[in-house]
Image (cartoon, rainbow, N blue to C red; front, side):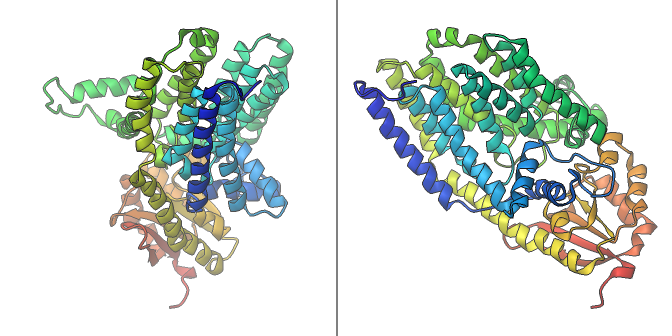
Length: 516
């Protein structure tokens, strides 16, 4: 593939734009806070247990639980830990590296220096939320780059790389399996041998998962689906029933609708905000400069990728998407969208349509991406979250490790990351992400309360927001009102000046309360 043409002025112009954009991305990434979201410590706990105890599970010595989302990230971090690298450093290195690798894969897919690659990389490397996710400690940028790598191997017909990319994509997040299967079916020349090379490892992994964890899907799937017991069609019906054409509020149709639609409404609002803020103008630009020749050339690939995005987004809308900071669950679709724009523009000639698209659509989007307020909002969220974790979660975890005997048990609700990780105690995650009974069995309030007290935990840490417990009020009201809660003493309420109205409340069993 020829990435640069000395005889084409477009190559020179595109190279200058891409170079400036890349420099901007490097400068902002370097200056961005080295933060970790609380959920990253969940991955670290699994990685640590795998690296040093040989068990990819939440509590070593107990029934295995799969509370991570994709197996690739905890395995990679476990490998780094075995080499003496801290999990935080490993997660940061992976997140930042795959952020820039995503840009490289996009550049290669679009054929080097041209108008399409310049536009796509400008939008990709200036998106303010990408810096947040590059440093978050989660697999967001890794998953986005894995999709781009699979597409690059697909269009370049590099079969061995393609099969490896599909496996990596599938192991990074479970929904990656869907895109992998679609791409594998469309790959030409089609080969049953290639199909088996890819599907046999996947089938073996799913069989191992079923035998080891007792389920084909991660526990996080069951936990996040637990609060959404209605379908997307029920949500549409609820909207019709709740609002008349004149805007009058109708009476609620019952708790069955309210349970699922709270999460759906929140998810839909975040999706529409993301679409309006970062994808609307690139989509309109793509319509202006649309090149039917490019579409016909990759029609099946475009259709399969679009179908995958629609299917997964609809699925996301029905889940209770916890920690959806900076549009986390929708961000991996952003590189695919700007890639599509670049694909339509890459063979464009300097024309009135192209000038109009750049002046009225791409330039305003770049202004939004480069906006100092948007960038500072991302920096502020990252820095305040980092400080809040240090003041609250890390402090609680270290205190518990120093205070509570190592053979005792901890209950956390609902922040289950840094506190269990630093405490090193066996932990019940009452939020359900790392608890199969709560996630899969869906106990009622009384059953959940009995389950809470059945473990006779040495310590309980509850997340409190704005002076009130913000998670599952019915369960917590029953727990606080239960006579058995009298065995616990409120020891301390941890807060942080970095994040007002957010606290970790620590209770310790009476026989273990340290003397004041």
